[in-house]
Image (tube, rainbow over the protein chains, first blue to last red):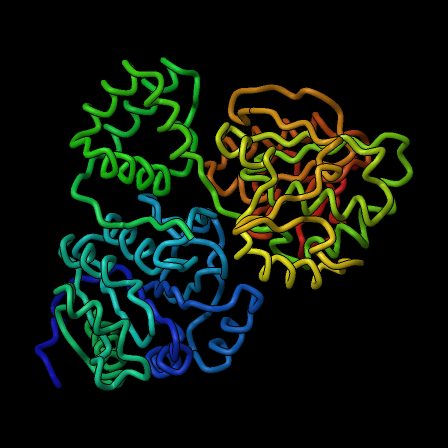
Length: 197
Length: 280
C-alpha cells in the first residue's frame, strides 16, 4: 500500500530498527544511498553477541556510505551509518554523542531498539525519522511511539511485505506509525530527502 | 531476564536533572553529576514510574526525607547486567597474556572495580585457579551497589543461565567443565565456596573514594561507559595510582584510554581485548 509521504520535513537524523531478516532489508534500503548522504543513519540490528564486526563488514561491501560501529562518546556526523555494537544498549545524548550501557535487557534485547529510538526522539524531536523493519520481536514499537509523540516521522516496513511481519506490525498496532512503506519506497523516500536537502 | 520499559508518562529538563543530582550529592555524598546523562535520566524516570512519583521535585523531597527509599533508589540507579565469561576472548587473553606474568608475584592482589552481581569475580577466580594462582591471590571486589555485592557474596545464580555460561567458559579456554565449580539445587546453582575464600567484597564508590591498596591487576569492565570524559579521566588516574609498576589494567571492549591524560603511561598488552600494562 502507498501512503502520502512527508517529504517537506527538515530532518537531522534517521534511526532504524531491525531484527530477524534485517540484513537483507538494511541492504535494500541503504545500498542505494550516495556516499555523501547528508544525514547520520543510526541502526540497531538484533544479532548474536559473538558476531562482533560481521554486520558492519557486510554492509560496508554493499553500501557507498561509510559504515561503522558506534563508539561510546563518539560525535554523531552525517554521511555515516552507525551500527549499535552487540551486547550494549546504544543511547543518544543531548550533545549528539553516543552512550553505551550494560543495563538490563529491554524486551529481551541488548541493544534495544526502544531505547535508541526513545533517546533519539528526545534529542532530535520533530527532525527525526524512525524506521522499523522486519523482525520477530515487539522491540521498537514503544520507541516508535516516543518518536511520534515528539513530533518525528515514523515509517514501518509494510508488514505484509516484511520477511518477518511481527515487528513492524507491533508498531502499527499501537498506533505509532505515520506511513507503511515497502523497502523500495523507504529507499526512495530517503533519496528524496537527499535530493531536496 | 528482568524487564524494563521505555515508556514514560513524565519528563523533565536538563536543568532540573542537574539540580536534582546536586541535591543528592549534597545530602548523601553519592555523586552522579558526572554520569552520562541519557542513561541516568531514563533510570530516574523508570524509578518514578515504578513508584508513581509524578515530578522530580516530589522525588527529591521523598529521597531527602527517607533514607530507606534513598537506598532503594541508589540500587535502581546502579544495576547492570553481566554474565560469566562475558566476552570469552577477553578471558582467553587473560589466560594467555596475563597469568604467566602474575605468577611471578608471591602475592597477587587484584581489584575488580564495579563487580556488580559477581559473575565476573567467579570467572576470574576460575581463571586464577586453573593457572594455579588462586591460593596466593587476594581479590578485592567492589561496587557502589550494596544489593549487588550481597548477590555476589552469595554466589547463587539461576540454573537457566548456566548453559550460556558453559558455552562462554569453553570458548575462553576453560580446562575443565564449568559444572565442576558449582552444585545445582532446584532452580539455582551455588558456586564453590573455595572460589571466594580469598575474595573481599566491599562497597566502593569510584566517583568519591580513594585508592586503598596496590594491585597487580585491576579489572573494570563496562563501568567507565557510564561516566562522562572528565570522570573517566579521574578514575583512570585512580587506577594508575593503584597499580604497581608493570601492573595490568583490563577495561570493557568498548572502553579506551584514548581521551585520558594517562594514555602514555600504559602500553597495549592486547589491543582488541583492552588489556593494558602500566609502564610509567
